[in-house]
Image (cartoon, rainbow, N blue to C red; front, side, top):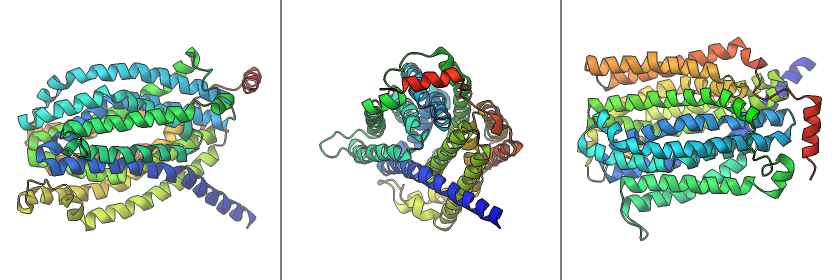
Length: 476
């Protein structure tokens, strides 16, 4: 009886931890979801060509940035494990290794803006779409450094479980981005009408404001005393090397995942403009499920990192399972809404220069695509939460190989062969996309059940001398 009560109490504590850390992240990702959703809705209302161009150009930009974001994001894993190990004086050093990487990455992403012309010429999309894709991509790449910095700066708070700060910063960014997005797309509040260029500028501006807010909250005198966020700015070769050891596979994994989706969207563009527009619209709607789920995934990563830093893998497992149950409950409700009311979601994206009859073909296709989303969303929940847990342990090599293999052999090659060689249509392409998500869920589950993650650590072992050095560094 006592053992059962103890077990029930531990489970309740796990739910409390997940909700305390996860809910602010869900709200935070919800604000990002709202920004992306309204951005796509404004562009869809602006013109069919604008919404057709925004998704492939936006995903292409994010695919390039994703490698650097995925690498920089491992800063939060280091901070979580240092926090669990009660070594706060290493937090500032870990943060700065991420910052130095971000600054280098920003130069690379800015240079990548030069490939816009050749990239979208290769995609083979219609000319009236391509001329909008290129400037949208260029602007996003020139401002790419802010999104990468956000991945590092937010890790300073998420790694320590202070997710309400991340929520507050993202809410401020959304409060600025949404009206600015509207104003720059349509030309309102005295600002010029810039269409798709205005959407890109609004996105970059929102990212810049978030990065500045994070920096102001991090580099304070109090945080210097606690975490050495100012004085630990030097490049630490050992720590930087370990960040690259775990972060670079994480960056490759994130890139391959986003590249697979990018490649998919580009292939759909070859099927036809209506198929591309329907896919872009449904992907935009899908952000309502995906990004809040990312919030719970980050929560799982944080909780596992802290528990393993404290050498308590059993607590890491309890927290992971609690996160998974909560996420599955959310995804089930959303999937039912997508099946029951698809037309209501799709109608939000009808262009202002197109009547309901002209939009009917896109709606008909979109209804079926939303059924695909409803099916794979449940499996996506499993994949994302277990991915977060494995990431929190530092299992980045497996994540890179498994996701890369599934992307290439389950989605990219079959979809390319079906569309290019056999002239398959939109539903065959989406079948391979769904198979990819199911494969990811299976791969994450098998790895997690294997239990190797329980013995993994990304931080160095704390020697007696090292702890003494930490203690001396904590003095004002």
